[in-house]
Length: 231
Image (cartoon, rainbow, N blue to C red; front, side, top):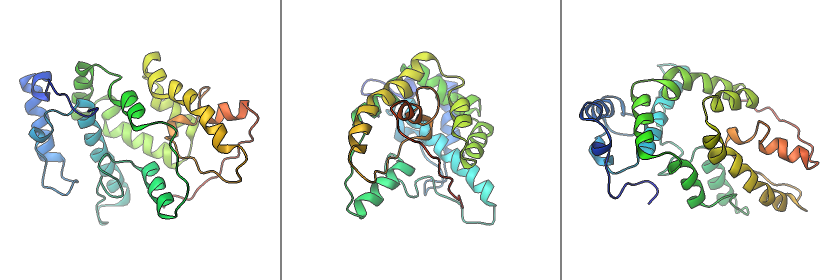
């Protein structure tokens, strides 16, 4: 229910010109999902933010493919991901299940969906979708390349700065602050009395004054960063 608009559609939200632009973009550019282009009609009742995330995931894979070199096998944006494209945290969860480790979540799927997909009015979501289509603002290739390079450098402070620089207070609260604060009591319970706990959260939740690491330090935990070799 969080992905769809029961009484609305992309065709209704967008102007005829924008809808045709979106339709053309998907047909010509969304070719990394195992098809020769995707039909936007298949997603007409999906919330614009869901469609935007699919678009940005496809763009991000293109950024990685260019970085890897044209001669290498192109990456598929759904590779290693579930239906919603869980990414690295989803991979970690599946690996833990495979190894028969205890698995617990910091929030429910409903809580996450509410924060991610219901924060913006549909009209605002439609605007953000078209900005990504037109290669503007946070949906631009240049911005995605910049974020990827910062991520590879493992500079979480810079990543937080860039990722949040255009956020309003309302957006910051919904996406990061409120969720971080809600997670902290659960984290403390998980860490209490256990020798090893592996916690996977989005990189944007780590840094900043409201970040998980800052809050853990304030509670007396010793934080030591461990650099990893990315291949």
